[in-house]
Image 1 (cartoon, rainbow over the protein chains, first blue to last red):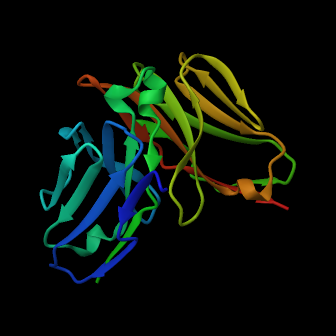
Image 2: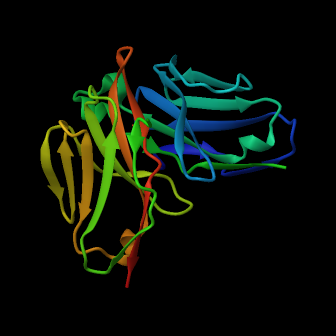
Length: 119
Length: 113
């Protein structure tokens, strides 16, 4: 059973379209994240949720809207896709508030990534 | 100044040698430090974590932390071609009651057979 699973693995779409990426974790973690990794391999935090509450919201265009229906799921919806949105998007989870030691709280487990190509 | 800085490489070492990867961070209140390995086309995976000054060893890997110098390093002994990957340094700190982890841009390691 995959610990952090995200779908789809590949997403090819036209500019201006709206798309969603889904993420689920079965680790019992409280905290989930979305990262964007660009062509230069820089892994940048976009959002983080702890028990369905948004706790980190970096400078991301408001075309990106995360949704966490429960603590095991964090989805990412992107409106009006642009060429610059092409990247690999990683979902991750960590123990967060449920962890004991701060190191254990912060260890992040990543999904396999979604490669988004906007044409 | 970037929060977490790494030399992008590539760092080339011969098989069997020691690979030394370095990372500096800007925020003195940082509390937890991680090294992730990312193979091409794959997701990052944790290989080491450290939070107190000194060395921490796990098999062929040793993480070193010097909070006074705001410096963390990763040594890989007896490097193998399978160690060829990008190594991401990550630093955690309290942010509004939660822990926030910032990643560096990664160092690409090439182990030459």
